[in-house]
Length: 271
Image 1: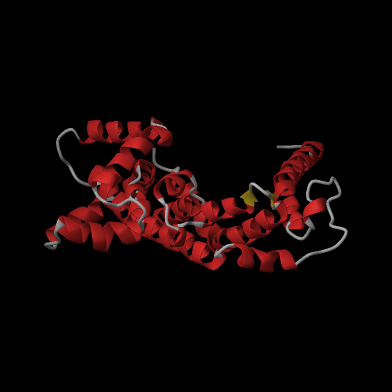
Image 2: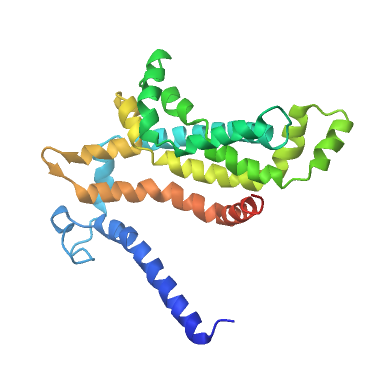
């Protein structure tokens, strides 16, 4: 059992780590209210609070359009990735077919390939499919995930196989077993995957930067580049746009943190 002194030391250490994590976030929020000349000064508080920075963001770039594009792409990728990952996980966890485990290991091995390596082949594929500079080009390549398949497979392995057998004896097809029996029971894993996927794709930068040329298709991370011009970097406006950019992620975390923690715990039960 930990002594009071050790508990106090642990709490102090955790508090220090938590404070260190919060410092960049607080600096971003405070910098978003500063005049440009004060952004790089050491003083944490602005001498003159400028909430008008948030209005100027909308004046300088089509912020609402970029906001919509980021949410639209992230939502579609989340939906498609959850669907395809669940179907693949069901095949690897519940169906019996030759070389299943070997194929699954090869599939998992793709997690070791850096995203930069697949960027050029993906770009070439988008050219062949005429998906350059389009929503579909942003969404389709991200609709499949080896990590999502692995995560949901772990959940499906915790579901008793007797449920599949009972459903099959009642005449259910494999698709009905997947859709009506297994998928509802894997809901904590689906929610966890949906949160990770949305967060990962909402802030995606390199792929939209490579693929998108039209102004009306730019996502928010790309749009914020236009605050850094040949005439200077408007850091205070970048911070204001960044604060507004993370609002959906903060709301998503606050709403779903219970499911997120529970989903991660359940996913770690079965190896």
